Amino acid sequence: MMLTNRHGKIISSSPGEHAFTLIELLTVVAIIGLLISILMPSLGRAREQAKGVHCLARLKDIGTGLAAYENISSDFVPPAEWNPDADEYPEVVYGWQEILFAYIYKEPVFRPETMTPVSFPVQRNLEAERFAGYFICKAAPTRGVNSGHYRVYLPGWSGGSYSLNPDGTFDETSGPDPRRTTTRSSVSPKAVLIGDSNDNSERGDGDFNNAVKDDCSYIDAGEADISGTVPGTGNRFSDRHYGGTNYLFADLHGEWDTKLREKLSRDFDLNGVLDIAVAP
Image (cartoon, rainbow, N blue to C red; front, top):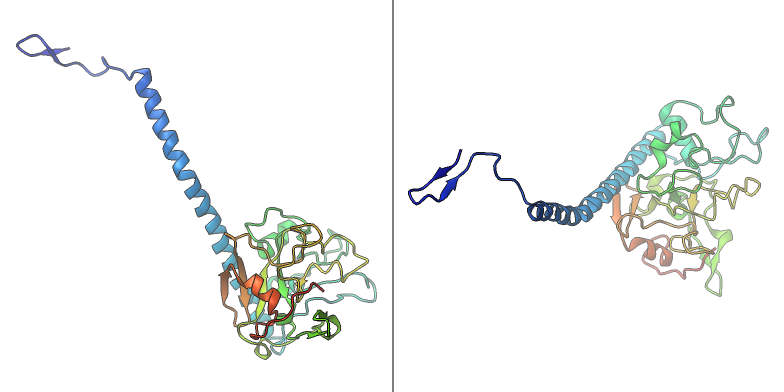
């Protein structure tokens, strides 16, 4: 039904008699597309921020597990490298991750019915259904061997420091032993214990006959900001969270930082004295 005024001009029509034109429809679609294109980067940033927050919370959880472990170890942290069964499997090397996993979850790391004895099974996520929820950052692009796990920073973790040779290079023989343990109270509270590691380290390459090369567990002095033989392959801290790295410090607080990786490459023990950053 149509309504007209006294001059006969249509002033109203029944619902359904007027439809959208093609131009109107295309205009609405274009506006929706424009809004989506504006919102998508914001949603992507929010997603990445959420991954960074989750990663930082994971590091704090690891710190809580570490504090619990210290209650039964006279306050000592687990070693960064050790042989769980040197008699039967002398080539197999474990690290702090395997120790904490076994302690926290109350189950053995190696299960003969499902695993072959290999080095660093937790750190390398060889049984994803058991290990992935503990040591893998959500922002890491891969989930297998060499993926973005957390690694300890040996100068803080083992409480050691390096001397310098006359030519300014690190005297590796004077540095901390990855098999040595220490107490957190013996190092500076601002010492870095754990951080996001590079996603594609040259270490952890599957060469189980060379446990030193295949440590897959720690970052040594001089390695914090070294890119590697091929860029992106260095055994260093990762800046995957908006150009920054998440760290856990000796006082067990977590922190995101964009500059600390570079600073550690020059002052590995953060004692205020600049060291010459030469890769070991």
